[in-house]
Image: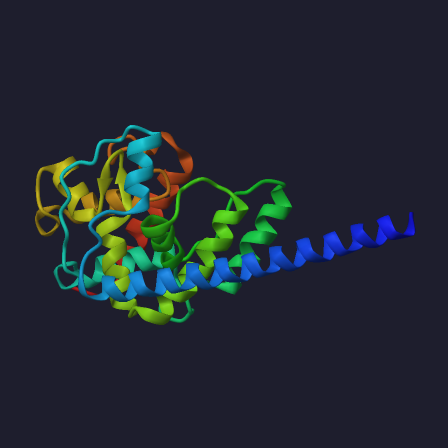
Length: 237
């Protein structure tokens, strides 16, 4: 009996040792992959993203015509507006925002449900480029690691450029220029300020609402009004 117990203890030790080695190797490979891909995306645009593949396979969202737009072609006030509403500390944090995470945790605990995820622009980009949209803790964990890695490799300017070009703006619509053409039939520089505000308003629920229907949801209506107030207060041409 004592001998059998020793064997069991040895098996457990061996199991945990192998599991620990596997977890370590997985993390190293994952970080190296994200770092290498992020470095490549400094110079070239992603040919596709995991979000696009996921939406095609699991949601049957056929990709609409995609347009990339240099960050220099996007008005500074629209850049500021998006950063303000999605990630106010974007230029100060290192991929994740501990302050926003703590605040979101307090809100979620108070109401007993997940109302805020506190994802930074970098985390959203990591999810778009490399992960999947399902709300799972393991995805959030990998998203955090990927965001820190992306921030260490890319400039904030490039991160924001990729976000503008690959964020989801509707069913099969990726990027703000693609959304501008799809919804308005015009490039971004030719649409009105109100139309741009409507596009940015959509970001939390781009597959459920359009620029003309988001007012059905109170949260998005409040977001639209806040964005308009913020834009009016900006002194940037």
